[in-house]
Picture 1: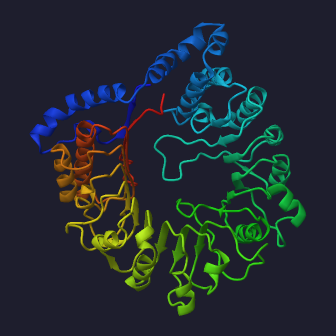
Picture 2 (picture 1 turned 90 degrees about the horizontal axis):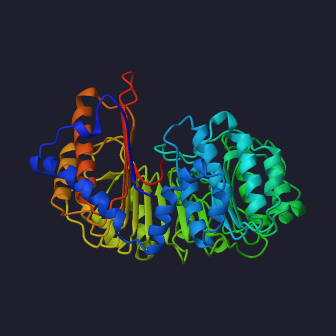
Picture 3 (picture 1 turned 90 degrees about the vertical axis):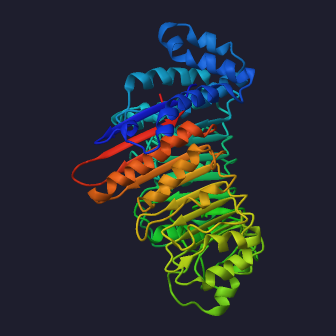
Length: 535
């Protein structure tokens, strides 16, 4: 399916903002068109071209041919599986939904499911359904799945809309009891994710008891005010005992989430990730102190904590993803030392660090093996050169409200960097041109307006000269904050020119979005995205 381009704007038009470079202005439109056409041709097999051709005509077939199901059933099952995946990922441009399109797509969805279907992810399909019909239609969709794919192993019920904030799952109340009963019939289910609806904890216990193969569970929980244990121990283990991943959130995250997290660690012997993945942007419950573990140590792989436990590395010896919160100020040396004694750390997140002392110790301990590093809310300056010197294998770097003091100095040993996330909403202007010269960068996500205008212009020029970002495939920038009217014109001109050059001159760039909301009475906002996941 052809990549789609959509522009929703007020105040300023993305394509009409001036740019100083005459060469870039004259060349980027034909270059953009050529790059789009090239992307459609490259890296496609005969199977891909066949799927493209059939998928383009699928909606017309459903609308005009009463026997469309018979024609779809004649297709090879691998081809139907590919088309099903594409259909469920399509996203509606209209945030109110489109009932006619939803009805058409639902017919295609049912026709494409087979008894061999093992995975269904409804991230996009539900965006076409109007809000007032979402819960009953979700029940109907689940019933169709059970009728046509009884051996399903993976079911993901999210609704991710286009151009949302970081956590872009839409939410529409509690899941219907009928839907819960229907899901309980999928006895082979190994992974279940329900994030568009909340589910009561007691209903979740009953549901999971019916799903003996379940290993991965991800849900939103309704309010739960129990003061004692979350559930009877034997029933809890019977329902969740096989889980390796149990992710859960609650809109008013209170003591229940903390007690449930601790109860899971103490009662589920196979659990590797609980409550949240520490390398995601979800809030993580911090774990430390005494645990009544089912054996000497826990198999937990993801751990969020503070330096308060001298034996934490002994309780959780298998941890690979470590998140350390230093907001408490001063910590006892034995507890700090314990954080340096894990053996398998691949991902490290350090937040609220008042000085470089603990951070540098953590990087000295784990930097050589780190593939991903996240630093957030620093009260001191850091040097990118130091980070890459200590972490030569780093593939992903996330900087969230941290002050960088060597923005223009050359960086060594960053050839493995593939992904950069940089959030800069406050503080001094940030310079990113140096780190964007990393030769292997594939994904960039920027957030905020504190990126220096002259530096953004430098990046745009380097892109037009094909000096940087030659392998970039994804580029996002979101701004959800007030910008002084005197500054916003220069900033928007610089960032949009950068994006226009990126689209024109970077051959593999297929995922682009820019969303700037100035958050003031003028309601001045514009959006642009290039993606294949819209209709």
